[in-house]
Image (cartoon, rainbow, N blue to C red; front, side, top):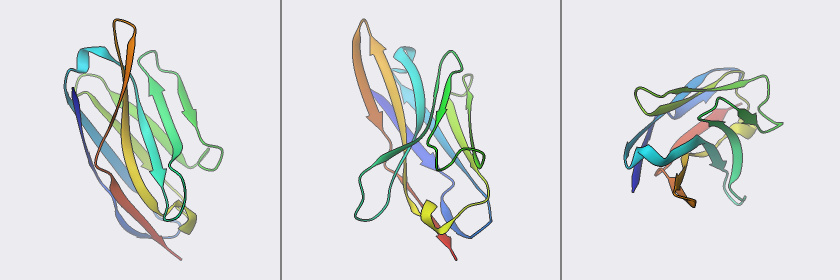
Length: 119
């Protein structure tokens, strides 16, 4: 079992910045990737950005050039630096961790942190 705790959400004006943090604890030996998803009211949860143990990163087209994901393996943490925020970035942001236990893949989720961008 992996426990994820997010922090760093809040209210910011359009054009502003926020930094989300997520710390993992528990059975972290099997982690292969960590990342962020978001869910706006009335919409499906969508991928924002992920990073693998090998350093491969992915970004949603809507955040490319504005968001940067980073990882601190020593702290078992993943971060999301969000710049040039737009009202459409408003959502509940979830930390995600993918683990592989001898070929058995498991996904874990944090409780979510709210990001609200005012126009």
